[in-house]
Structure formats: structure tokens, C-alpha cells
Amino acid sequence: MKIGRVKKTPEAGFDLTPMVDVVMLLVIFFVLSSQFAQAVRKALALPREAGEAPGVMKPETLIVDIERDGTMFSGGERLDREGFLATVRTQIRLAGAPEAVDLVVRADREGPAVHLNRVAIDLASLGVRSWKLATAGDGGER
Amino acid sequence: MNLKRKKRAEAEIPRLPLVAMIDVVLFILLYFIMAGSLAPVEQNLETALRTDTRSSARSEDLLPQVLTVEKRGEAVVYAVGPRVVSDREALVELLSKLPKRAGVAVRVSGEVPVWAAAGAVQACKDAGFLRVSYVPRAE
Image 1: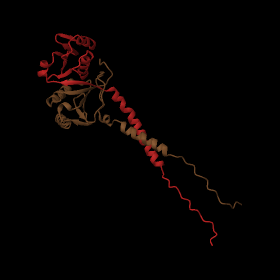
Image 2: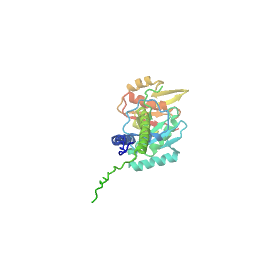
Image 3: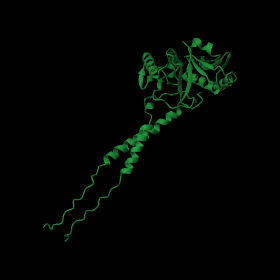
């Protein structure tokens, strides 16, 4: 018969502190490096041209998507012509001048250029004479 | 006199239950790894063409070289003055011979597809033009 005191067996445990530190740092890295702006862009078949090396996309860059039928979207929201003009006017006000507006037009490559022309004419009427046409970067369309 | 052995009060180390937090953090990490790996693909594919728009009424006064992109029948053609070409290589070759200093205006008909308009602007850049203006044809 055992009468002596029962020895408490020590509980095995991992020191999780360094792992939690590393995981937290990784989470912060991915949160900061992910580009959420792209999530609201429309899935469009862009013209396959080499274009120019894309610079750093500024947060204030206005991105306008034009679908094949001419429907316009910006920031995931559908825009009519008035809405588009109002958005560009707001952008001009925020930038300080029409020349300072940073604008990227993403147009479906198979759509007629008439929609792109309409946007270009509207931009010119507001004084925005410099804009970018997004391409897929494959190089050499047809 | 108290002969009884004093019970030493063992100071217990407080422990935080971290298991649930680690679960959540790992899920968040997994989400960002998945989302982060997808985003750069489109970014790498996308490049931009810088274009300057000018109203069609003023384009000829400002820019001496005018490249017209239009449809003739079912085909897309590129015209520089009287010279008309229908493929990209010939267009780049034609544009390469032109003086570059004043730049070029690309007049785009609304009938042509966007790829032809972008292709014309790209051809101008490939030919060595630094100043390429996109001129929408009023229709």
C-alpha cells in the first residue's frame, strides 16, 4: 500500500510566444502588402499591348472600367455619363487641377472605340488631357 | 508553539489560453497569403499607355503627323496621309521613317475595336514617338 504523497506529473507545454510573434508579423505584412483596390476592378479582357512599365499606383488614382457595351464602372459602382462627369469633377477638385488628375481607363479590347472616344471627349471637355489606357501587357494584339 | 510545517504558498503563474487566438490568427494569415498571391498576377499583366487627348478640331494645328485608325469593309486599316497599311509591322515600319519631333496624333474612328486603337498608340511608341496624342473622332 502506497502511503506517500502523490507526485504531481509536470504538464508538458510548448512556448508559443515566438510563434505568435512571427505569425502576427506575417499577418501585418500581408495586410499591408495586399492591394485591395484591384478587388473592385472588373474582370475585363484588356488590349494585349506591351505598354509602359506601370508606376506606383497612387491611392487617389481614378480607375474607370468600360465594358464591351459601353457600361462604365468605377470602384465597383456603375456610372452613367453624368455620374462619370461628376466623379471626374470631384477628382479634379481633390487633385487641385485637371492636369494633376491621375486616371486609368480600362476598356474591353473587343468593344468599339466609340465608348473610349466618348470618355476621351468628356475628359477633354473637363480639361483632363492626360490619361492612361490599361493594357494586358502580353504584347502584340493581332 | 506551532510545530506544524508551514505550507508554502506556491505562486501560480497565470496562463492565457492561446489556442483559440492562434486558430483565428492562422486563418487570417492563410486568407492574406491566398489573396496576396492572386493580386500581383493582374498587376504584372497590366501596363499603361500614356495618351494626351486633344479635341479633333485642333489636332491638325498642333500635331503634324496624323495616324488615322478606321474600318474599311471589315478590316481595320491604319492611314498616314495617303499611305494605308493593315498590319502592325508595316505600320511600325512606316512610322519609323517619319520625323518624331512634333509627335503624332492618333485619330480613332468609333467603329474600330479598342484593341486597334491601343495597337496604333503602341505602334507609335514602338516607332520611337515620345509624344503620342489620342484624338477621338467626333461621330
